[in-house]
Length: 198
Image (tube, rainbow, N blue to C red; front, side, top):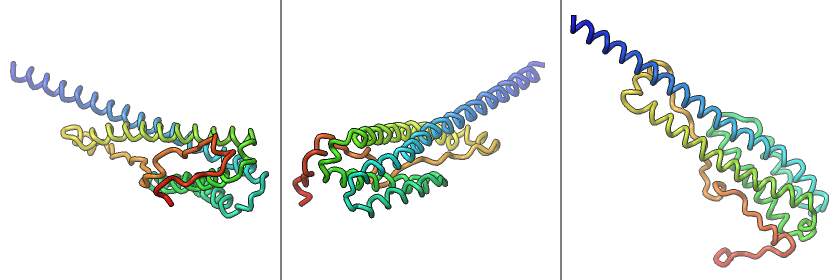
């Protein structure tokens, strides 16, 4: 009789442990998805800022159509979506194109006096900061979730119930990892080449 009771208790504990573990997987997976949605919102906000930014720069007509066309093309491609590794590359290319656009703006003092451009440039910089923060939060949630998916004994439940590792959203290039450096004071003066880059 004691053996039967002990066996029943063990089965109940195993089932309860499995249910708790399953629910924790679901909760972590949802957290990963929710944190990605926040990154995605900021990425779309950046896409939305690009047309206004280009319009503002073009009003000063600098003959830099190649840079403008690249920003438009990169924003178009980035907005198409795709898996995270593909998107990371596209987002990195867009960030680099925006850097080139801001470099053009730095060379034209008239833009420094354009309030609309300065406001859009500030919004882009803030959006880049939020994208970087959101990416870190998303990747931290992915790391916690993936650790549970791969660790024993939770890996047994993950394999049985179809919980698969989530993909990180990482930007590979070091210069793209940082938000664009925007020196608002430099808009009215010619840009200087840092020592060592000459």
